Image (cartoon, rainbow, N blue to C red; front, side, top):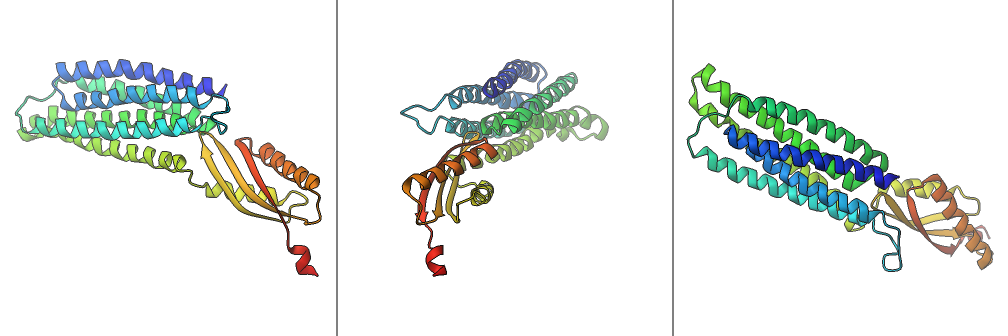
Length: 298
């Protein structure tokens, strides 16, 4: 159910992104708006990003097998990383094109392009809210990356709207013909927002791919395990994220007089307790150690 919901949201976003990209390119060319064309380039990156996320979600939710005993969750991180890189590339293309337009004299954009941008902004913001809700419910980095891709698109469209409005009406009301360049300036500023969004997606994806520990989860896991009757000490707890789930490694100190059978049963009890209280834990590896507490008391 989780996978189908996330893939459905991604597919909805993909369809709208394709349609809006076509609209932006057409409006930007026919309406002589550099900001709209730049926005279309960003939307094209959005389309490729949604395709990546859609495929990653399909792969990530395949069950673990002999070749991949830890599952395919990191496919989500790979797609989030790829989407972030695509955003940075799109920002670079937008800046280069905008600077080229600045040095070439041109007329202001057509007035009707403003209404096209308003429609695009509203649509993209609605898509962001739809996709990010599902991403937060299921804690999916890939879906979250896809959602913020829509938000980045809405931001570039908003910047384009301001730039187009200034380029159209600025020279008329102020007499400053140079304000026609506001169209290109808006495109450059929008690229800055895209870079910030891209980096925000890349950082957590890289952390997950490098198996960085989750400090928050370590604290919770340690507390829950320590409450299990028979556990004397919990140490060396490592928690790493894979997709929307977590894998836990820990050392438990127990009564040194316990038999191997009883120690094994205790570790099973700890695993069951952790997974029942935190369903997102996909696996727990426990190393049993004899507690020195009894020796200290003697």
